[in-house]
Image 1 (cartoon, one colour):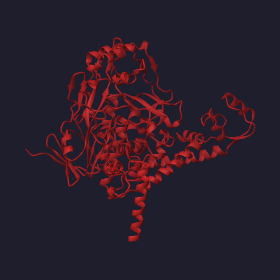
Image 2 (cartoon, rainbow, N blue to C red):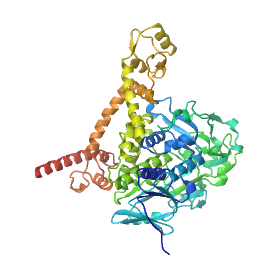
Image 3 (spheres, rainbow, N blue to C red):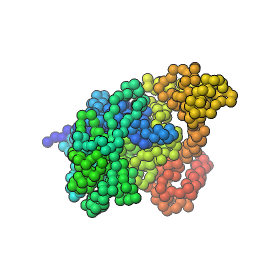
Image 4 (cartoon, helix red, strand yellow):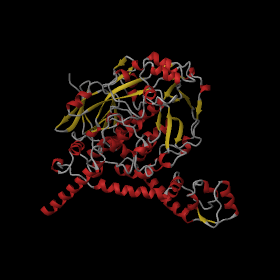
Length: 631
């Protein structure tokens, strides 16, 4: 039998959130791209929580959109509830979160893929990567078909050697009972790729008709909905929303869990993989937070056309009978009918230190990687990596400079830098606390930070880029106008200030000075700002933040300048760390292992101390001086 042979530019393995963004980025740059999936029905599948965004994750979605990705547009078209989190806190931690109609989200993303030029979808399992002389040249499927390519992006998610577990039941499938990919791991190991075994989990899904909502607290979406995508007209997302519901576990729930821990695969040793610390199962919560007599449980609808509801906060791998007993102790779930049992899933992924900051493997040219396969967790983290990996695969083929984002300019930069420079022994999750410069990396200014980069790379169209330039011009001019515009201590102004619990004026004041008052804002001052011009969407918010937090922003920008200096001090690729005297053994080992591109990156490697960095700086300076003398 003769096997099929095809020639493409880019192969993407896996069609989850990472794979979709990778394939779209590659195809939109004109690369002939094929995306492989074990099931076309699983494109952009949400096997766990039915939402996009959330604390810090909302930042990632906004950044994906700013660079030209699809996730933000897709959730704007398919959400059923939307809420801006942390509104009572400062703008650095405001994060958008939207409940998705899971089926519609997947269906629309599939439609986008199917209608993108240069992109083909193929339902098949990739069993082997073909590497020749340290370079990817193709992949082979389970049928023996060979797809020759110039670059390949691995986005296998949780499918590699996947095993779903609850109690003593262990089934070798991927999420939602889909086919696992059982052969690719052997090929990766044969090519020298180091693999990890990680684990994640999901809670039960229950029948809405069996829930007593009278015992729960109703959770509404925002009155004024803010879209994820900077291209979405806010008027288009003002829809009727579906409610979520809040309830709590109790001591009876916890007692059932504690008395059955010996039957939990997590504690019996049946599960080998490492789970995410920041998304623990209910068993872990009860054990690790024994002082708490209750835990929050959110009941979230899975979509408009299903009665399934997601029991957020009760992820578990306990046996089926224990799950039934446990869930029925929760107020409102006493008579709940379980549609799908909770389960844990183990899967193979890589040690991400094998990647450089472009998400290309250091030892296999043209092989890129994104998503949970890189040891991360979450749809948003996956999509962000997929976008970067797919974009860089295309740029490398075109002979152009790859997009590398650093920690000072994006959450995506923080995410990737953490993955490739730190020892990740558990699934990585993005959090606002991981970003040192989070006041600058707000979700509201992602377009200002990143859209030009997306435009230079070829993902942002000219019209959108021109609109951004106009927006930035309006921000600058309006900030200047507000800082110069004065109001007097008139009766009208004093009455306005009194109504807003603000101190009366003794003399004239600029609008900028009034905005700096905690109780006032640019939006509130519209009533007394008689000359306010018509502005583009989002301009007022930027003016308000830039004025109100001016001192903090300037201080953080100075910190970024210092950071940039270390990032600009590049380390030669051929540097032999054994020649660097006075380096501690641990530092030498770690530097050899990670092969950092810059002093800044080297300073963030665990086991490399400030003293080691000083030694390295002195050595590099001596190297440069010696080369000058030789010349």
